[in-house]
Length: 156
Image (cartoon, rainbow, N blue to C red):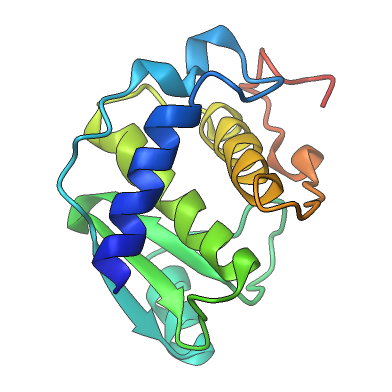
């Protein structure tokens, strides 16, 4: 079932890449090839998700604290980690998978996403567009993603 959801999300990304407001042209989702190998998906308890993330020196966006996580993507392992309470029928949980899957696409396309703002803000905007396509409004707090290297999204 998850493989079909991932395939559907990749197809949606391909079909909707040009309709994302506020993404800088350098980060256009239309520049990517979405015909990528699917990432591995691992489900962990919140405790183990946090351990897996923080034990390797990662830090949560917008926070210097070890906050709870919904999920994350690990590029070197081509793996999406999601909380074990993730529900395929919950649009916000689908949004989390979409977000991490888009990071997979970015890295598979060798995108220069060294600036966290240039990686996270376009991803969050695309995620918002995905969730909005179901008639649900999603608030995105993009200021959380701002970093000194950000030269494109200062006004968001």
